[in-house]
Amino acid sequence: MEQMSLMEADSTTIENEEKSSVPEEKLNFPFNVSHENLQYYMNFIHNSKNTQKENQLVFWMQRIGLLPKVKLCQKCNPQQKMECRKARVIDRWQWWCAKCEARAPVRDGSFFARISCSLIDALKLILAWCEDADCNIVASQLGVKLRVASMIYDRLDELAVELHTRIKLGSAEGLMLVTMYPDCLYRQSPDTTDQPHKHRILMMADTTNIPTNYWLHVIKTGCEKLSNDDNEIKEEVSSILSSVYGCGLLLVEDCVPFTEHHEQLRLISMNSVADHACSDMKRFIYEDFWRQATILCSASRDYCASKDYSSIKDCTRAVQRYLHVAAYRFRHPRNFYEQTLQAVAQKYNITMTDAV
Ligand SMILES: [Zn+2]
Image (cartoon, rainbow, N blue to C red):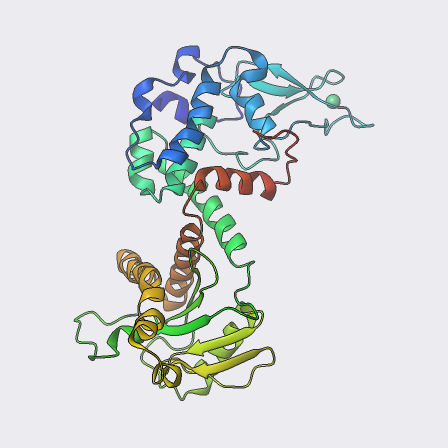
């Protein structure tokens, strides 16, 4: 595998037939894989071994939209449709123009373009990302260069952020909650931990969805404990609430600095509601709904501590990305691998002509 991972995917290096078949032990992933994700992945293994042309991995990936099905020759004018031909390259197939004999990798125009590892390793790395497995560990276990594995993780992170930030929270009839991390942890007792929290995170939840839709926003305004009366932080919170929630009634905890004027939103104090609520309701709005979000925020704190950013701005940006990806992953508790591959296909605008 090592030799293969060093080969440029687009090169015409002679391929070793044996090396591209996938040995059974490769199914022992160095990370936990959910049953559904494993089932879906098995399709690739099956197809990577198939000897019939139409069943081979490349064609199967074309069918589910992960690789383009047609390609026009860039050198010929008028444009000429290229043909997919067997070739001694890592992907076993490449595009070929019958008129000018130009060649092009089957990965052109796809997520997999310029990723220097075999397609099956790339699919494994996507699975690893879906399972939130450590990129360093997975790369070394699969014998893929860390640079290559990181590129795949980066592309998926970007896609997740794009998809996650596209949705709006809120509805006319649902219950929306807003609080601030870590402030909400210290309702009863003050923060006495040795390591102060570097970031404050505005936690927003739409309880109409199962699992709860979260939006976790890392506060950019002054990271040291700023007074909630500060106008700058109030403005930041207000503008985020307006952009994240389309409409609705928001219960806002008192630790959140906010201005009450919003065009589409009605903000009311969570504490004033809680004063009249039963104990179940209190537990619900103060604890139950925040359990997962609090776990993600606390994981982001570890993430932040493990990195060494030169500026607080870079750190804020990285933690924000981490939290968007984590919240996106949390919204997809089932069949995440399949959904991720569909998102990849859609992102690259490759039409899915056949269902899987
Ligand atoms: Zn041509």
